[in-house]
Amino acid sequence: MEESAAAVVQELRARFAAGRTRPAEWRAAQLRGLLRMATEMEAEMCDALHADVGKPKTEAHVHEISLVKSSCLFALKNLKKWMKPKKVHARLVTFPSTARIATEPLGVVLVISAWNYPLLLSLDPVIGAIAAGNAVVLKPSEVAPATSSLLAELLPRYVDSTCIKVVEGAVPETAALLEQKWDKIFYTGNSKVGRIVMGAAARHLTPVVLELGGKCPVVVDSNVNLHVAAKRIVAGKWGCNNGQACIAPDFIITTQSFAPKLIEALKKVLDKFYGKDPLLSADLSLVVNTNHFNRLKVLMDDEMVSDKVVLGGQRDEKELKIAPTIYLDVPLDSAIMKDEIFGPLLPIITVDKIHESFGLINSMAKPLAAYLFTRDSKLQEQFEMNISAGGMLLNDTGIHLTNPRLPFGGVGESGTGSYHGKFSFDAFSHRKAVLHRGFWGEAKARYPPYSPAKLKIL
Ligand code: NAD
Image 1 (cartoon, rainbow, N blue to C red):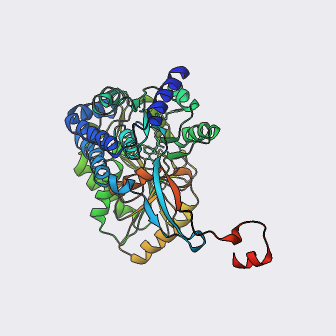
Image 2 (cartoon, protein in one colour):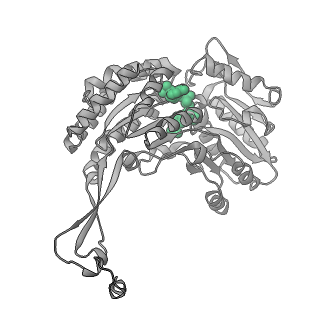
Image 3 (tube, rainbow, N blue to C red):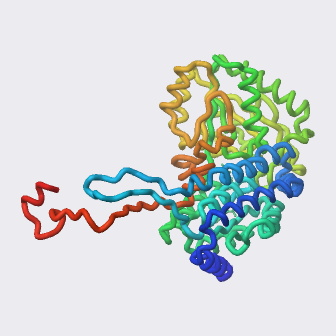
């Protein structure tokens, strides 16, 4: 296994060294290939996403395929501009000279992706790596096998397979890849494996981007348009892979007095979106597999929270379905409040005053996203000032990732580095300082023998 991983890297190193991936034309051709693939193979992609996680077609299209297409288009539109060296001012001490920042590809990079958005999380980093002129190995998630094998089958048909390769596999195959020397590793997944990836990278001094997760809080103030807030919370939680999304609301904080109204509003919206029996709804994704189902079952059966259910709680183990389930006032030391839930369970924590939410959030690991619903501009300002998170959204959930002009990534436990749009290009580029001089303009004071007089000039 390790030999074949080494052979892949060796082959790509030779291609990269020969300069094949550097020209703008090569990069653009690959991006056009990916765009064509996402357009022509849309139906196959929807089928694979449905087979892997029961993803509704609308979610497959809007949350994955169309985002892949728009990423390709954005990179294609901006590629020449991104590649152009940026002139900077020269300093008097280097007179006469010109100075610029030139971007160069890093070399041969590894992208390891996760199962929950298996298409987007595979192709979006690859788009950045290609735009920046690298040779790439993509290792899709074995937990989404249909999408993994579709990517392995399709990529060689649409892009240059001598420089862009898919290696399928689970832990042993990934471990073999991680033994190799890469010029960057881009990993999406949980923080436990993130530590393994970072450890492996450290052995070769390889830089990493780690796109991890965490518990994304949603603070709901009483000064809101409650109906709109409830819809947007439901869309961000259950409308995104049934809660199996890195930026899905993980828990809500609201005031004791407002909680009953919020719960009522959430119930109404859930009822409208998914009907009286959500287990029958075709618009909710399944839990991805038995392991994750059992993990969620343990959270639900925990006696610290099992009597705190205010909505939902139904599940069907055979069909891997869990209904949207809301809890009120679970203890902060219960399992559901410790780790990222990554599923359709949503606890609500109540406080006396909404500002108490800040202390609670700051006592936990820094989340990938933090959400606040309020009309109160002062509260919005304080939230932005006091809460550290990968990204932040005021009066909505999740949609910040659709803006390619915003960096997407975590901070602290939720990750390191960021991507999307130009940030993806930067993540896979080295910014090289280039200072250019001629042969005139010698300052004698620079050279020995040194003297106090020369020091004065310098
Ligand atoms: P996963 O099980 O698909 O694992 C991710 C990748 O790690 C896979 O390719 C897998 O093969 C590899 N892997 C697993 N165990 C490994 C090991 N021991 N050694 C080497 N490689 C290994 O996905 P997951 O981790 O269950 O994903 C869910 C997590 O990812 C959540 O925490 C979620 O918040 C986070 N996530 C983050 C983002 C983001 O953009 N920040 C996006 C999606 C998911």
